[in-house]
Length: 443
Image (cartoon, rainbow, N blue to C red):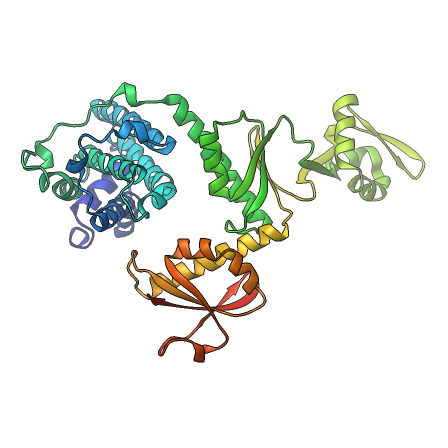
């Protein structure tokens, strides 16, 4: 039953990636389905993304055999290529030692990086109308990665690998081997591995993860631009990598500070375990005094002198750090998250300009949702109708950006549904707490 429903590849992958062969494993339909979704589904979606846009643009890898791709690779291209060759080396070594499970899990991590970081960050490169150098480079890099991955996963998921190989290689090259299983296993190239770049990208991913958490805690949507993110406890990155952080977290500036004094304050509570014995009946009176202590000033005194003095109705107590429960809290105007020695802080103050940009991004998101709901082709040009309200002047200023992002030929403001084309009605949306209405038609 499971073979019929999920396929042999999914079952193979579950056994390969689930646990080491000498450990007991619970087998179920859900475990097979989860293994399939986690790896095969992600890889197949990435492959489908490539095929969709390659077909739209008529991209054929053989047409660009002499294209100087190395000259035009972005930092993301160089990183994913380095990750790929590091992966080939690791999988080869693991398989040499019959460590199938670790090899499979390394493949899962790579596919997650490929899909949810590299491809997601590179999507706009495939959207341009012309086959310019950056777009060609993006196609070549992703094509070559998918083909190499097909070779790598062939021992694990032979049928999926064969499908990818037949479409991307065998059906397009007359001299290609008949099957992927007649091809050589990939060989890593040490010249393609850049450990410094991989390490720096790990820092980028860490900062992005912390920045997203800070946004969530401050209830700031990612589509709302912010003025600045501050990083504490880490060295600056190259401008190429810093721009990834700014763009991913939608912040205007990225800066670095040596300490968190400007970002972090402290609150204190009494440590009952120690103060209960010392203060006795004075502890209830001391609690509000301790909770009212000035955070940063108190912490500085504890660091410098090892203690502070607390006057409880004429009785003086010496308190050490062990007598206080200290908690870090963000200074007003910041959202802070950290792990280990690294902290990131988002400046949460919103100017009128930032609010306007957030409004525009929300509108673009809703219009893209409408395009998908109406089953428009990704290349369809549209006319966008927006119901007139007090934000019309703002939208006029950003009209070109909106039209570019949603592939609109024009924006038309309307007063009521009677002003729309026959059969078209406005759809209402909540945009940052305001009701707005839009309609879309193919131009």
